[in-house]
Length: 638
Image (cartoon, rainbow, N blue to C red; front, side, top):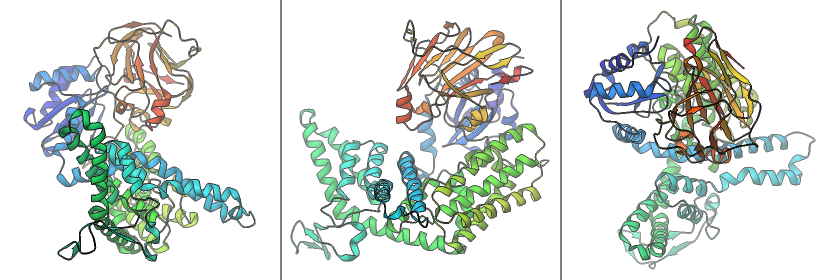
């Protein structure tokens, strides 16, 4: 039975508090994105039962309703008609959602934005450090005295030795400045002319730019300590923030013919003076105080217990990236991240709680969500478990907090730590300094949470909170712009397409050359759990997407990375190239079709760049879904 788009939209409006409770509304390829003024007026349990709504979650101030490709745009049109609102872009919705966030959350958000992109470098270095140190400790191997040890130790330590430079580049990108000027500021702060920050106890020189006696209120103006800022991150972020504001101001006020020369020169000079005279001395001292407090906190069983319990709550609020500052400081100052065991205890406890739900529930839908989400949590990615299962049923979330608290106490007592940050759960074995103790910590955290959930949670209870698992952002709406013509041939990409999805209406053939993987192995919770329909993933070898069947193009994402096709028997297929690639805004994607085009199986419809996807730090997994798979009695996937 076809979905009544008007009825679906009307029910959504009626149960989100009406038109007056919506600040902005937009849609992407699969979801209706709403910025709500008062969340207390939203009837989440009812929305979950609305025909056409396949799931929902809240993220970054947005209420996102998962409706599906080819359908969401029609529901959105009816939504606008009912509410009288005008269409908004995805960026409009993001801006409105950000403006609605509390001030403290808006202030902390840049920290996460700075650290998330540099995590691969930190994780890689940390893993290598753990491996090198483990090999060096093997008796009789002689690895610690070998040239290989010296070389690999240098490679592993590079990211930490030059962390201010990496942070400065990322911060410049976040604050909208020139990343190369940001790199200069980062390099200035660890320049070889300065005393290494880790050797400060041995003394350092001072520059008096205006003389010894130029003082105001007992403070010598122009005094610059010849001291580097190795191991510090907050002063770097603040310095680059100031640099970006100075640069933007100068771009606006310096004549265009002089801008190329004056703006970078003045930007670097002013920022350097501010950094070494004010920002560095003040905020490095404050950061040291915070770091020392954090180290005392995690060594104290009571403090560790509190943080282990509260850690999942900070994940819910999107604040957990602020710990990256503390962890980076620990690694730079003492070489051991003692915060990581607390995060691992908290995350593995949520795994235990979610696993208990998955094993205890008799509801097939809940089980298909809970079991993959638990697996994800065991690997350190807890958002699917927290939002999709544990918070939904409340008691598992609380049991997870208790398990995290108990495991953190054990971690504080044993004093274990890691050589990296950004890695928890099972992958944490590669960085932890005592695998046996770490195993006990994970077992205790998981066991307490599992037992608590199994004992106190009952499936018959109504959920106290409702959120679907937090998937990665999907593609924006289809573009009506004319598409470029497909190449006459693409012999380097041509291959024998095999059927990967079968139902009574027909077959969907492999659209891109590569290795087919099971749906649950797709690195995205929404796709992996089948929220948008049954399908498969493909790890591509080629870079051309071919039509998987005869049909009509139903949608082409504005960001060009996703295409919808309607085929025989009204089969609705979504081809989504990469995970989170919507954020690339079309860079690296070239569609050969537009909405409404008729296509034949094997016809090239999209070209993409694996290199650009990799450079943007996204997975290039191609997702192929039969989004209306519920309409068929039996759907088989290869």
